[in-house]
Amino acid sequence: MNKTITLTFCLLAILLPVMGFAQTDGDYSNLLQFLKGDGAFEKWFMEVFTKLDNSVQDSAAGSALVGKAIGGLGALMYLGYMGWQMAAGDREWEITPMLKPILIGFTLVYWSGFVNMIQAPFEAIAEPGISIFSDIESEVNDLRVERFKKQQQLLDAVIKLKAEEDAKQEVIENTTEDADDSWFDISEGLDKLIQPIKEWSIRMEFQMQKLVAELIEFCCLSILRICVYLIFFIQKIWSYILIILGPIAVGMALIPGFENSLYSWVSKFININLYTFVAYTIINIGQQLIASGYTMEIERYDTLLSNGTITNLDALMVYVSNSGMIYNQLFTCVAYVVTGIGVLMTRPLQTVLFLQEGREQ
Image 1 (cartoon, rainbow, N blue to C red):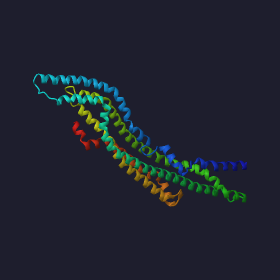
Image 2: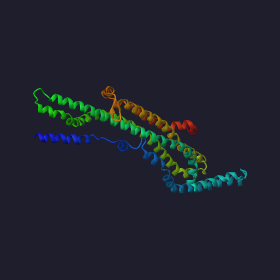
Image 3: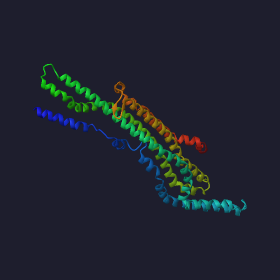
Image 4: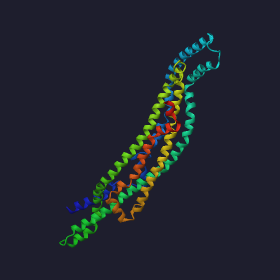
């Protein structure tokens, strides 16, 4: 019976630390990337989803045929109307008005080139912001990994410390005055066997506080990503619609009563292509806030432990007993939300800066 109990304790002592999910330094980055994505904004989305314009332009070929047909009909109506006026003497003979159908015809024939010509300057304007984002994102992600590492080290250190104290206390309580000398011999190493069991139990207790903190961060990080993804998603939708239906709008510019449709389309297309520049400018500023939040958390963790070892026990006890795991990351969560709201302001900011709204009204 005693051998069975001893064997059970030994197995638990070996297995429970493994079940505690201890991580080496090289595992923290991969674990964080697996759990929460590669960076606050998710590297896959920023590199792949924001570069889908080529497939959109390929889909515009079919609608360009409709635009050419409308443009051809409009050109006949336009030239017929102008020619009738000139033949009747109601209008002087001019060559300049006749160039409009030719220019629109070339635009429809080389529609993809026309779209690329408009997009090129705005892509060049946005390129510095995208490069800055890549550089800042790399630095901020390093801070994010370091923050995650400190969080795990702090949690493990607190659990280990409390488990040691609880294990010793349990041995003392079980050591009664009636115990013989053999019990004292066994009790000298019993606390080390009980400690892993206590670590598992305490980990479950601290997981509740950590769970609340993780839920708060999850909500704030979700708000940030939803706002960023939504802005680029809206841009892609508008860009797709304008590129697909653009040939029709350009072709209708030759029909009397729709002379301004070309200018209106160009204005809207320029408007939507400015989203990238404005959005990345806001994101880069928000990255500074997020980096400040990470740095603040890391500095607080450094006051409590060094290389996974507790350096300030009193401060640690205050930190744990007052829900420090929750409050410590609030600044980072606020930075997530503020950046997300700022990204949603892309359209109003772009409108104010370039006075697009006033021209449309």
